[in-house]
Length: 93
Image (cartoon, rainbow, N blue to C red; front, side, top):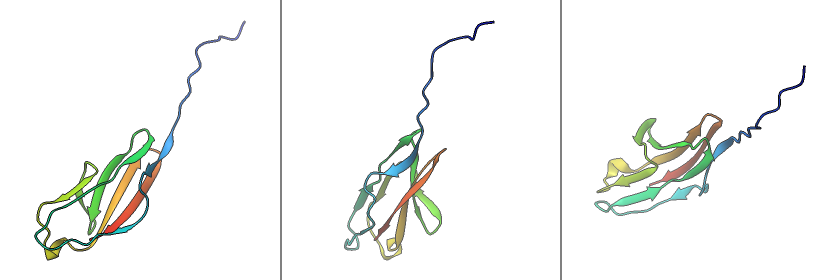
């Protein structure tokens, strides 16, 4: 019998990588707004979320605080996850 030849399939997978991977320290006065985007690349496309105090505070890659208060101060972690792994970025407010 002859070997069957068919179409070749190329599967590309990549670990997620956050585009701006430097930790940041942000200073804002109380009562002001704060907005920061976290974007990541990967295959399959990663899910991006923001975490503070072990709780998810945003699931769309954008962290937005309408009016900053003392309780908003702390460490925020952007996490990008896909089936191949994860990447993270810290921001301090």
